[in-house]
Length: 283
Image (tube, rainbow, N blue to C red; front, top):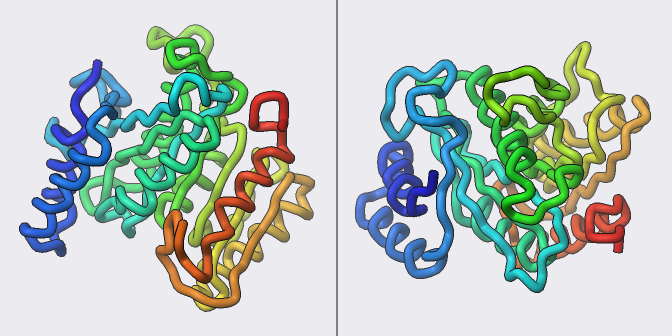
């Protein structure tokens, strides 16, 4: 099932981004329509089947927005992108669509995740949404000519916390499930955690984490120090991990393509993914 990106994503922004003036929202909707007219949404569950749903409004039905690279550029890799926003709104621009475009430049299909938010929903629902997004991409990989073994998850701030929780809670799927999406693994093949995954938790299965890339600004001390601790814990556990802490800057830099402080970070991520073999042929 497909729905136009603006029919749901922008209505969602209107409802949850209460701190933004209506005129800015109208401008954002117009800019989004002009810049990304060809993209579309896919709900994570069929209508009426969303687990833990507390209603049937735009805040109750999570979905992904599909960003596909040009056919001649595709390498078969894919990524689910979870924007941040303190779990009360979603920063679709710099932490969603711009990142998706960068992955498209590399040949990856990108799926920007609209997950359920507080205070209406807790982490249990959000983790379900994150796992389901991975499963949906993997289950429908043939539709987009994707490799089901190269499906990653990239999260920003609150989305970064979600990414870590998804990795910790992921599993192989249920082979006898009635829903074919539930039959495939929810484990991301790589993990990108941008300013905010926090320190590791007792009992967290770090040795089973996928290759993990962490990035933050040093002056964003909570995110930076938490990321540094998580990197050390992943490294001690034997997982593959790489970390970049930039000396200047702030929280919330997103794709940062033209930033004097952070513009190298996505180039570093590309290198990390190439080293891990997540580009076609590992090159």
